[in-house]
Image (cartoon, rainbow, N blue to C red; front, side):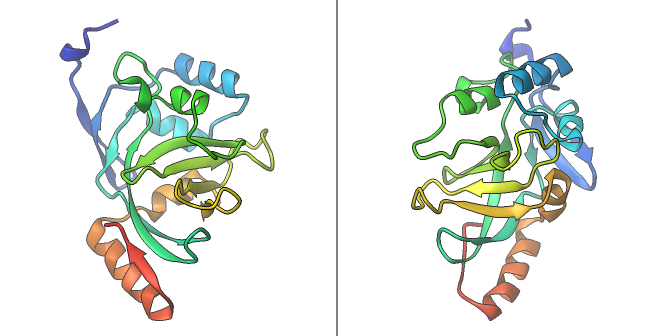
Length: 187
């Protein structure tokens, strides 16, 4: 294991988005151990991302969605992707640690893979089918009613990545959505 202080962080361009501050790359072995423990299969596009950049921060990080918790469109930004390698992070930033110690009222069948600065989590949704290797993407809104604190984002990981915009572009999109109804932004 390398000394954490000697690890050089880097940026990488993936599908028209720059991931900044990568903490190295996730090993296939770490990913497989995590999948076995959780008893799921992660989507191939996600595996490709984390084997190129473990724990990065996307430059295009903002997106809009309809919040079932708040019953309006919201704009929010992804903080970072959770990490696989214990060599590079503090425990709270590890995907497996988030799974083992979820937040209060965190629904079973969700697997968080990204964090939002306000405490919400971006998740794979395995609630309907734990064998789905390309599950829908949802956001768990920690401040919501436990019976209604999950909002749909995208049909799969690749679609979620395509939703990400820079904050200016996302703000314009939210303004357009706001012409249709009430909105809120955390940009």
